[in-house]
Length: 604
Image 1 (cartoon, helix red, strand yellow):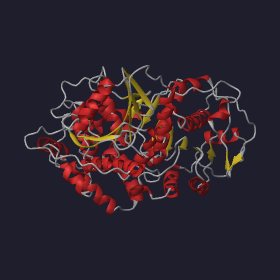
Image 2: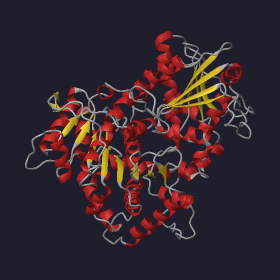
Image 3: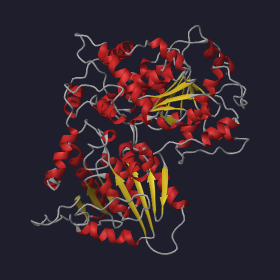
Image 4: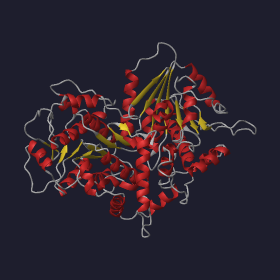
């Protein structure tokens, strides 16, 4: 890391000051504004004070207490906010967890049920551009006015109900938003709420839900190991914690419809996609321990058989697993609530695979087909075409999801039209955060044969002080800079392992030379791959686009953007390229920052 530390000193001193000011957590003496005079940005800034700062987060990880106690604390916060866990039963919740694809599964499920004319609520995380994206009514983020109103109502309610014995008067960031979502869904009288688990399942704060209508588990893999465990089996145990015991007349009706014998006590129906044997066995055991009926989703091909193929609004082969799970969740919900038009069953008797009953094979209804086709979920296998530039956006951040991302990207390139003349350039824009294995993720991306690999922090601008939605107190300046430099080193080492050239060290800037917005760079090693590190997303996009994206038109590039020879020569290549393909991946927060600049309407 000695090299990374020396490169970090190239960060401009003025930017360092602005960064540290933006990162500092406001003190407890800051008094909340009146709900009548506060703006949406005021609400978001106050919400941000509930983020756990980086130092405290490390302390919590080292001294983590009983997770069950944390869940009980969430119930106390709910009570202080004016609700009881029983009140959440009115929301007719679909509760979804998983390592990858759980957000896409929720998006498919919500859109399918909305196609039936139902009023839907949808709680998800993280947000890409604005925090209000996390709470949706009928597929749309709640308005700034509604967010502001409910934020201050909940904030003041929690302030009023704190007592001297409470060591923490306010719930942390994600807990607060979860409480806020429940209040909004109840106030808006939604017919159902699709709730995506934050992290894990068993001890996630959404798991105060006691009677969901149905539960789902998307594909499992390794992620959040410091919280969930180091093996996929340990993670599966956490995910299976959302399975629930109590039954209802609707659940009995669903089991009768499958021709299954009833037990005296049975739980809420749950569904999962095909998993590796180890984690699937853990899920099966977790379900059996509480008599929860857990079903394995048949592949989408089984539902398409005998009818036209299903069209999905989300691209990529891996989305077919998410769509298959979503259809089962939606159909189960509709059946339990006594709705008609569920799709004709193709198999009269239930079958078993890997000691688990298969979910029903049925003919998808027109409503289901339209819902799958019309699903939108930004930042997941999303393509934006802008003149010679094509942006491929996917927030993949685990080994399995990056593998799926690489397959999707290469297939998209294969399907696309090649320019009749002029060179094509491939660029990777990457960042990774948390306890994820960045080196492993970058190795998976190597087969895409990028001409340039660009690394930057998850910050739209050098200073996020003017944009509350981009503020993040959970990391420090030094952490994000060193992380980006480490990513560059990983990439260079991977190239060296293939080509074994001598390592090239960039010259130190001469006194009086302009400070480059580029922190560091390496020239091509294999496949003409150069790697660059920029101080923020805006600077990275300006270099990549070279003014050729008709939407991305910043006032003027920062001084020194092309000061380094690799950046300068690369700029010439990009200005002359007939086609530029840019894959943005590794972090949903990175994708969100890119979308903020490429799609300004999302910030309105």
